[in-house]
Length: 190
Image (tube, rainbow, N blue to C red; front, side, top):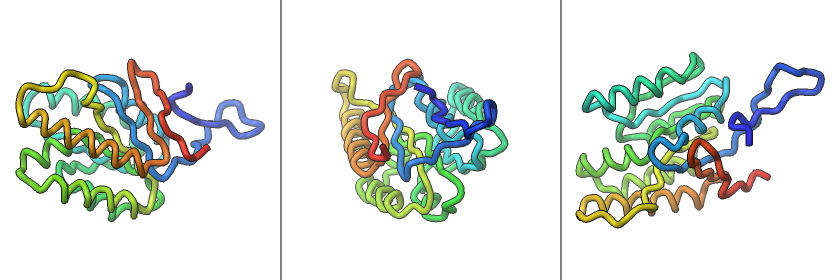
């Protein structure tokens, strides 16, 4: 499967044309699965908004952020938004797709800030339903391992699993990425 999902116009061998994006795409995968790179490739060369939810709190996270930034070209407008991604979705233009990377870090931020997780998730879902343009959301699939031995980790896993299910239910396309390979789980655009 071509990660770029591009098509070539008739009569042109070297000018890719971006395929239309679904209204809402959810890209799931494990850590270092290639999910972010896959989601970025869906945007191709379109002007787009990159919603970065990570907060740099140590050198390792700074390296991860640098890696992500280095892959993005000039067509990206970055919005560092650790908590209120619903506001970015509500303000967005229909002309520029939004890529949120990642929901899992956002959920961690919400929990660590002591916010009302249910209310923030409901606000996000409402903003996604009302978004003016296409949105691509990246999230970790955290439910494939053992049940954690502490309450905070179990609570986080429960919230992440429910959020992923709720977004998948309203998404037009859901893709699971493992070892850099995409597996389409849902596609109502075909």
